[in-house]
Image (cartoon, rainbow, N blue to C red; front, side):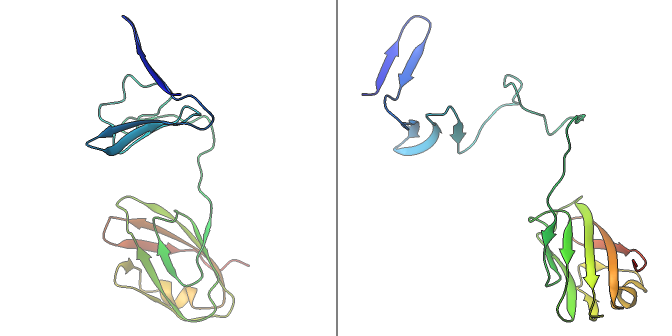
Length: 163
């Protein structure tokens, strides 16, 4: 049986039983919950977080002591979803157009292009390349393409062919 108990110092909500959550509702709609393992979820949080511990501010400069990296996303059709990650590997099976979707302002990363078939590469209107990039990476070989996004376009540079 779940209980609510109050005293001069505390309000205690107790969800008795295995895997029972505490639910917070407004007008019959759940707004937050605390799971039986102590994880709190909510539709939104307000405040600066200054009274929360164990969190990192995303609006301040931070130093990291552990590695921070993403997983390489395999995408062989030449259309790179920036929501999927920063770094991509592309091994096309035919001609393709370098395209970016969900373009995020300030995002940058790399594409490892393994164009072993020498497939023709073209650029979507939002993929800004120099005069030589497309001809270079359309030649059979492996290339590292770097990109930077301003929120509208992705600006690309490429390596020479890797042996």
